[in-house]
Amino acid sequence: MTAKRIGIESSLAVAEAVKLANVDVIAAYPITPQTHIVESLAEMVANGVLDAEYIPVESEHSAMSSCLGASAVGARAFTATASQGLILMHEVLLVAASLRLPVVMAVTNRALSGPLNIWGDHSDVMIARDAGWIQIFAENGQQAFDQTLCAFRIAEHQDVLLPVIINFDGFHVSHVIEPMHFLDQKTVDEFLPPYRHPHALDPDKPVTMGGFAMPNLYTEGRKSLDTALRESKKVILDTWKQYGDITGRYYKPVEKYQAENADTLLVTVGSYSENAMDAIDKMQAEGKKVGLVRLRLWRPFPYKEITEALSGATNVIVLDRAISLGGPAPVCSEIRAALYSLKDRPQVVSIVGGLGGRDISPADFEKLIATGLDKIKSGDTAETIMFGVRE
Image (cartoon, rainbow, N blue to C red; front, side, top):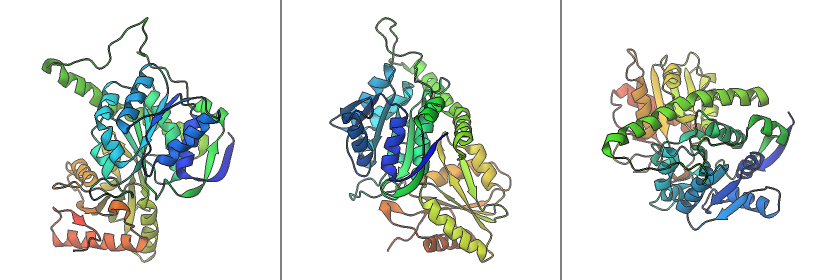
């Protein structure tokens, strides 16, 4: 393997991964902060660097619809979006999963309206969590590059055939220039087999896609999709293992940092995990028994791994970067559900912060952890804490 190390903006690195994957069709509509991805791909196609069809559509709904048509006839398809764009294509997201079409999509996570905000949080993807897509989080540009390549292999595996979202934070990752290791084309070709859908649309071999289901069949259809999504985890793990054997960069559904012998564990998702690491280092140097658990695989939800990672702790503090209006924060609610059956389960406190791109510095993470511990000591952990809010 030849690994070229260069400094590049993370969005452009994702575009390079898509090029290395020899994608056939890109359909996209520009929206901040993902536009650099598809601008770069459009330029590659226009300059003849990438042999693909680029479809400039009139909306994100059309972008996903175009990707579905391309994937259904056997083309490797890619798109990217964020925020309101992801919401606009939501109707077609559900169709992509139910038709078992392995579209890959990069989502530069961004706040939803209103008020209007173009900066990053996880509101957009949390609304899409039940769309039937495999969903993976990257914390930095290197991970976004790696996971994009892995996504095509996972999605198109004959035992999976499901669409995949690669999430990475708008601006905090998408627009940051980082030193990264790229793979050469030969290595990617060996890692990523050609796409072949076993039931691709063909006039000579007609099949039905998207049929109508009466009540006596609908439940079985949804059960079948749920089973496929849950069982995709085996392929995800195998793909990450093989990618790690090539690159030395191994990924897991749940990843721990300084978590051994920690009484208190902070759970984070996405790029703010790296700021949290600095806080954990400082607190441990001061003799405090705190550690970090990072959630990488969002769907299918890694119940086994998250339970194993958290079961030895006394206190668990979960940071969500999305608010579920009128209800429990999404990541924390699922972690609580995963831990509920444990006989000696830890105390769990839910904190929402970093909305609309608001920074959480290492010093803020120290305060956030202290706030969570105070809440646990008070015995009142039912309600979600809004961290840093001015009231």
